[in-house]
Length: 153
Image (tube, rainbow, N blue to C red; front, side, top):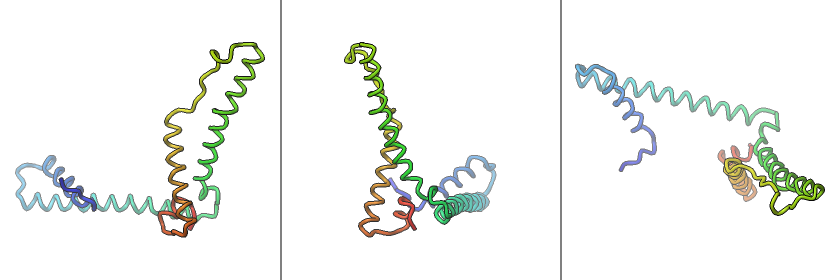
């Protein structure tokens, strides 16, 4: 099994597959090769344009003067902590107080209040990446990836 780390093989395979499927079977091998090469160039141009657009968006976000947008990752972390505090501390305490005041048995009537698994997966992933980036930054590691993770230049 060959692994194509550059993506060139996959683009060439896609272009060849498109030519084989949608172009007339009466084409000569030279015409097929020329059509495949033309499609391959168009696909590569499109991919390059998409990457350039993504890069320009990230650069624009990092170069703007709005510190909140640059520091959105910590905001996600803090929001998650607040959500955990509300759902796993505040709401159970309120439920416990209400049950106590009404004289209802707490052991059998306490509601099950939890955050969904998707919250934990998404928030845990963001926190993990951010903590790794901040730890690397504090150890003196500076590169573009660490800068993107932490929001620093």
